[in-house]
Amino acid sequence: MRGTSPLYRPQSAYNLLHLPLVGRLLRWRWGRLALQLPFFIVAALLLIDGFTGPQNAARNLATVAPWVQYRGLLILAVLLAGNLFCMACPFTLPRTLAKRFSLGERRFPKLLRNKWLAIGGLFVIFLLYEWLDLWASPWLTAWLIVAYFVAAFALEAFFKESPFCKYVCPLGSFNFVYGTLSPSQIAVKNADICGQCAGKECINGSYSPQTVIRLDTITLRDAAGTEQRYEQQVIHGPQGTPGCGTELFAPQIKSNLDCIYCLDCARACPHQNIGLFVRTPGRELLQPEAWPKRWDVSLLVICLAFMSVTNAFGMVPPVYALEQSLIDVFGFQSELPVLLLIFGVGNLLLPMGLALLAGTLSRTFTRSALSLRDTVAAFAPAFVPVGFSIWFAHYGFHFLIAPLSIIPVFQEFMGQPGDWALFSVALEGSLIGLIQVVALLGGLLWSLVIAQRAALRLYRRDGLIGLLPWAVLLLLLMLAALQIFSLPMEMRGTEAMFR
Ligand code: SF4
Ligand code: SF4
Image (tube, rainbow, N blue to C red):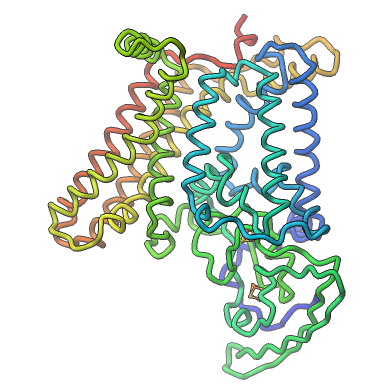
């Protein structure tokens, strides 16, 4: 199964799998497990502290690690490197086990093989976060982690593909959408090899209960046009690797959407024909063929951008005034219906309604014959940078006001006194504000460029008028975010630093 063709023609010189040490670790058969195990241990520590530690959010690993540290680091990692958190995700450890015991032979129901569950999952998790004050409850956060493990195990173990990652997981959906901004992507080195590869192991895997040996004959032309042939032995067996769980076929990958960076494809490919290449960040946002023209995918991207605003709105004073007015008007007896109304409107109705309106207006203004679905799909990628920048401003704020808070929390978890004075360093409020404004304006600009390119592509000379409804929508989203970030925001989970 090992062996390298002398005729490889890598598309990019920067294949991260060729890096010394890191590349070897990533390509190693147990490479993903080696990354997942530390995160599994971290998850176990969070559970222990969440269930048995002090129920003070700012002094418990279960709340500080996920709600302050994890979100800030995730947003940086996805922007600067790629979907590293899915790569090391401990929740999917059961998939490897399930493959070994051949539990998962069923396909996920066809009706659910789309992003509607993901939109629902994101809606529910943000609603629960506010309703149950998850950030303030180590105990409930620990239960949420347990729920993640159970859901991931049940779905990964009993279905053939990875439905939890691809269709359900709110964290994964977030990473998929914003992973499209990343400067790295899975790609094949030489598409001609894929055309002659008999087993397509990158998607089918190289696992089988019994050992089976095959010989692939590959014919390629070198730079001078001379035909050369080589034979590659391919071994399937109990030591084999599963194929792509999210069912991406490596030679056809055009986007990071749905890629969890597990690198199973690279390990399974018998021709060592897959790399993790450095690329232009956000490349697929300007490539219409990289985006499926589907309502569920387009609305996932657009809803997530609106969720960034609603989520931040939940932490500034006007939300309480709004909640009180809704209670006065509708006579609600508890907080849940109030939040359902705010989140239902802000996270689902508004984004879906405004996307339909903007699409209808741009079609009407330009007398375009393109369907509404395809129009919305063409402009949906423009909501990625703007949405990301709002999440960045929000999660970055929580992270930067207490970047080292995890250290005294961990000291206390280990039974030592927490050195709060030493690790209370925080960035100046004005500097954080500046970072937020730069990120927000940069995101808006990037989004406008993408929307403008889409408008020119679709409407040519009428591009400007076709762009107008989308530009207004992006601008309104940004103005709402700027207004929210100009207000005092709750320092959830970090109060102990400021006592
Ligand atoms: S990436 Fe590898 S396994 Fe997949 S088709 Fe190409 S050569 Fe075959
Ligand atoms: S293409 Fe599939 S197998 Fe390869 S890294 Fe992405 S998710 Fe994993």
